[in-house]
Length: 107
Image 1 (tube, rainbow, N blue to C red):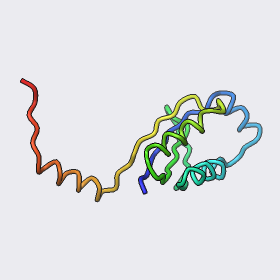
Image 2: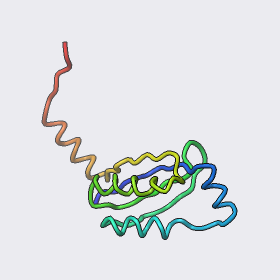
Image 3: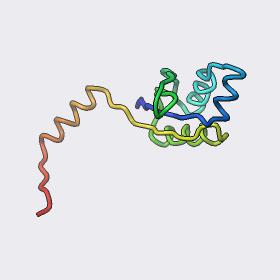
């Protein structure tokens, strides 16, 4: 099953609510992933441009898009970025395939 990394940033209002009522969001995110046919691998909070990272295994890109849409819909997330992750074996296979074809630059 493909793995996805979703980076997210909360709104100020979301941080205010979490500061008043701290809660582990892993259960809610895991439930959402399960409803879309996948599973939560991990939830980590970060510092910087994004407030956290979710790693999830999902059946396909459409499920990854659906989880992003569902997550931002309540309005507590101000930014989200999802990246499809590839296992080393998948990257090696891509390298093998790329090595068997050629492509010329425009002239």
